[in-house]
Length: 405
Image 1 (cartoon, helix red, strand yellow):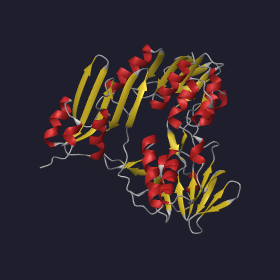
Image 2 (tube, rainbow, N blue to C red):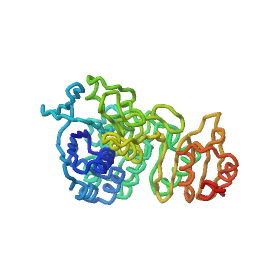
Image 3 (cartoon, rainbow, N blue to C red):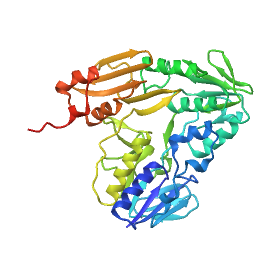
């Protein structure tokens, strides 16, 4: 059996481990347009803020010491499912018995007049991006981050750690939308501002000039460098003539199979289903890519495994010393939600219910029971008499264990 994997991220790594577990000496070829390809993407802000070496973030050498694993540098440009081949930009073709597409996503750079020409624009998506931003910080005094999502805020903290004066510009009325609600976002924003980061919401960047940025409101911001943190898009353009079913990304079923025989997809380039809302979902979460990759690898090797679906929001992190966990449906505005909020000095908790199920939760500050509540959301467990314990925060792990007679 010859396995071909396009892309060298965490979804690919998880698939490789799953295939190895079934076929220890299987022939596995990985094609990657990033060199090196296998690294810890969530840790990239640390590379910037601590001015660390890039090789510290690569996968350890023992990962590559795998029988039959071959890594080919190159970019896939077309797929021929009839001949079971993938052609690279070089013209080389690689055949497969089973194919995994795990090409991930690319940073979306907004089309702002003057941004591309400024020489100041950076992203924080790849290891190369992080290295470029790290080096630019050494010569900069001021930085502006466009986008107040999690990547943007992590980038802002990294720049601040490098002694830059930092402003975050977010066009929505709050940061971290839709990962957190307005009340929680205000708490996070206050903590970031205490750390010396200026947060500007409801502002749109109109243009970039030699001094910095001009906002639609007429305000000017000085910027020696600009980080664009405005989202990602799946890397699927090379598949448009392959006949594979595409929607928001590559459409997959619960086994990570695509519409083409013997072709699977996982990670940021795959469309699955939202576990809570049962609607199409393209997740850019590291944790979901791990599960999708594992599921794909198992099924490629003939060991049946289902991926039950992902969560649009699933974050456990820390921002300016404030611990945060947000899971499931947490944004404001759904009239069918039953919401319970508790807030005190330095802590915030929001629980969202639909009928008898917990469908979303936010924990800020005190996250001691976040894991337990996350399991309730993932399993979609009907709560019954346990609902009051969930609301009152008295639920214990023992409460979820099956009762024996």
